[in-house]
Structure formats: structure tokens, C-alpha cells
Image (cartoon, rainbow, N blue to C red):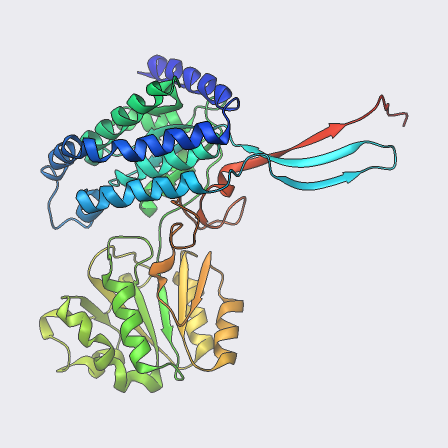
Length: 418
């Protein structure tokens, strides 16, 4: 397997070099044609997706991530057209100056080269990653999970068909075998892959970080909090908590822990009432539990344990932590946050400003739902993932985050004498 993969990775590197010769119009034509081709391939893609779904327990939190349907494929095609309509991130001049010796210096954006993505049960990522990487001039190596094997194969076959229609190498997008061995080969493909971006659970991210000798950008895991301050609006809190928890509970921007000011415990039952209709299990701490006892369905109410804080539930589960003030809320977030998305609900501008300033996370919110942590929602087209680290990229990783830069120096015969 190793020799075959390395041979294919060599071809991917060659394909990435040829992408530099394409104009932005050439790339846009590929993306628009692929978006147009999706409706005609819906039956084939959904048949493959059904094979994957049949192998997974519908109760598994990954099931919703794995699921494709007509509306989701239509949205994917729309995202792809949006990406095609964005300005190219390549060739932008970031800095320009002339030195005293007459040398002209320019700092310009360039593709990363070959981007490797390792991900789990999200076949939509296959489309998203390809569109963003191609638009930014990068070739792509994908290592999807075995859960989505049939879906990913069907999607990549469609991409290859469109690439060949435009006389581009199918090696522009390479899907690795589903076996775990292929992941370890990928993570150590120094010289073949320029950067690895893991997208999925904390376990997957930890695996990539520990095993990879290729540079890694961490994305994905979200342990998300929303703090309701004593000054927060009740109706706003009800709407935001419901949306952040139940819109799509299996995604990384979904709410995991509601932190509530002690003075607002009388409002907790009203805030959680809509959650009961969605059958959300609430793990309440020692102060929040009595506030909900008899006012929240008993079969959905449980005592919180230490393990319920700092957990990314990815399901209809949520913990509640009671605090005395903003400082206690910030301490709790600092201890348990994955630095993904954190929110405050407060009318007091001093509380809002302090929260937004002091919370260390990729995205911080005031008086709105964390569900907006998404490249498309930020107007970036699609996204590779949400980076939770601080080097190179942070937050939604879209086109600009898939570029690096180089210095271009032009002279007129200058030589260095010292």
C-alpha cells in the first residue's frame, strides 16, 4: 500500500504544479460545471450514501453528519457557485516597498501547494474541500473515514469526470484508501504534502497532531459555552440557547454548556422549556438542578458530574453551570473551552466588552447564537474547518487561509557588498 500511495502522491504534487498555469476563469469554469453536474448525479451519490448510512446506527451522533439528501446536495452546489464567484486569493500583494538600493520588494500570496485533509463522517467536506483548494490553486489529498467510504468514492468520481472534461489531471484530487494504515502514511508524507488539516473529533485531531511529521493545522472540536449574565434579556436567552443547541446538535458550533448567573436561576425553567420539546437531556449542577426539578421533564433532567463539563456532546445533551459573576464564568470557560466559539448574553455593555476582550477563542459572540461559526455564514464561501489554534489561521478557514506568501524581488543589477 505504501509504495502505491507514494506513487500517487508524486502525481498529486505534479498536478499541483500545473494548477499554477490556470487562470481564475479556468478554475471558476471547473467549479461551476461541477455544481451543474451535481443534480444529474444525485441518485448515484444518494445510493452510495445510503450504503454508508445502512452501516451506522441512526442513534449515533455521526449519523446526521453522514446524511446527504436532495436539499443538502443543492446547498453544496450553491456553496460551490459562491466559491467560484469569490475573488481569487492568489497573487494578492500584501506588502510592497522599494529599498534605498533600488530593489523592489513585493510580498504576494501563493497556494500552499498540496493540502491533506483527514476527516470523519462528513461527505459534504469532500465537495467543500475540493472547491476551496482548487479556487486557491491547491491540489488536494483526502483521507475520509470508513463510515463515509461509498459516499466519498461517488463524489470523487464525479469530480474526476469534471476535471477530465477540462483536460485537468484527476490527480488534482486524490482520495486515499479508507484503511487506517493510509492515514499514517499520509501523516508522514513529508515532501509530498505541505500541510495536514484534521477535521473531526478531538480524538482524530489528537491522533493527527501526535502522529504527523507534516505540519498540522488543528480544526474541528468545539466545546462551546454561552454565558447568561444577570443583565441578559430573557426572550433573547430562550431563542439563542434553543438555536445554538438544537439547530444541528451534531456540529462543532453547537452549544454544550449554558453558564448562568445565580440571579437568573428563576428564569432557567423558562429558558429550557423549548429544549424539552426537542427532548434535550440537561445535566444540571447542584444549584441549577433544584431550579429545574418539577419544571423540566424528569426523564430529561440529570445531575451534572465533572465529565459533563468540557465535553463536546454532538447530540441533544447540554450541561448547566451556575456562577456568581462574570469572573467565575470566564474561569469556567478558560478551564474547559476548546477555544472554538464562546458567547455572552448581556445588556450591560461593560459585561459584553469584558467578555469579548478576555475570552480566548477563535470566535466570540455577544447576544447571538454560536451557530453562526461557519465559513459560509461569514461570507467566505465554504470552509475547510474551524481552526482553534493560533498559528497561520484561526476561526473559519476559507480561501485566504489556504494560501501562504512569497517575497518577489526585482532589481537592476544590484549586488551586495557587505
